Amino acid sequence: MANTPSAKKAARKIERRTAINKARRSRVRTQLRKVEEAIASGDKAAATDALKAAQPELMRAVTKGVYHRNTASRKISRLSSRIKVLGA
Image 1 (spheres, rainbow, N blue to C red):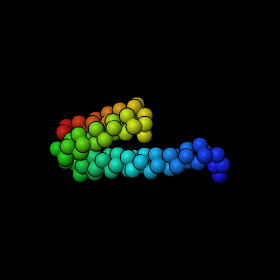
Image 2 (image 1 turned 60 degrees about the horizontal axis):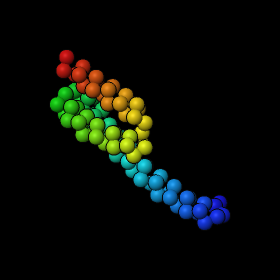
Image 3 (image 1 turned 90 degrees about the horizontal axis):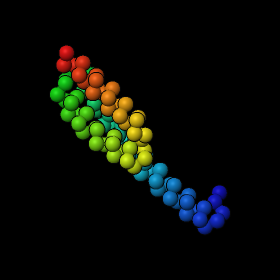
Image 4 (image 1 turned 45 degrees about the vertical axis):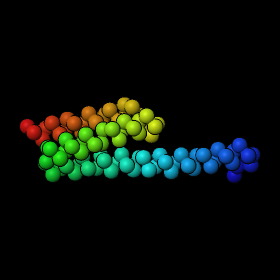
C-alpha cells in the first residue's frame, strides 16, 4: 500500500489512466470486430467502410500509447489484404 502522499497520488493517477486506456482498447477491439464480421459475411463494401472507421480509432490509440505503432500498422495491413481478397 502507498505510504507517501506522492505515492498515493501516483496510485490515483494510475487508476484513472487504466480506466481510460481500458475503454480505448475496448473501442478499438469493437471496431476491429466489426471489420472481421464484415469480412466473414463476404460483404466487401461493408468491410471497407468498417476498416475506414477502424483505422482512425487504431491510430488514435497509437498516439495515446495504448498500442504500438507497428502493431496498429500490422493489423490494418492484414485486414486490408483480407478485404482485397474478397473482391477477387
